[in-house]
Length: 143
Image (cartoon, rainbow, N blue to C red; front, top):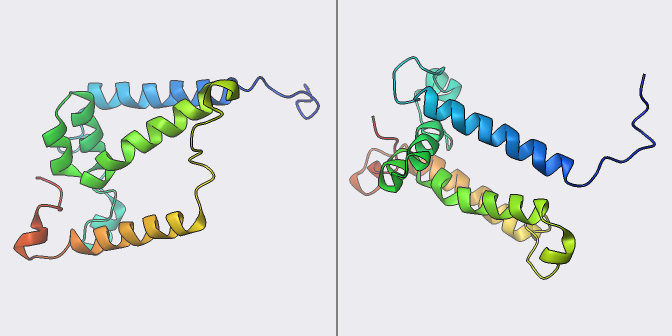
């Protein structure tokens, strides 16, 4: 058995493995279209409560982003579309050597106020996308 506790893996291994996993998930989303009924399981929150969770429509939104259809992606989940650039920035900052990103703001070191504000935003989005009133109806995922 190999003892990995004494050896540190090179710092590029974790970002590279994450990049490969995300690329594989993206490839799966382009091959198996989540807009086709039954292609993926239904959202457990939607199945149990009948309401849209903040993630409902995210697979379809990413599928549309990968196809270059920004408007279609926003129609499925605007919050997921807004978070993608932040995730890409965070991954690039993680993957590049620290000497290249020394002056970049660190996403992982966000102040607790920003984290709480994001949690409140997600909660408000969750409530708003389930309201039946016209000003909020566009937040529900497109059929």
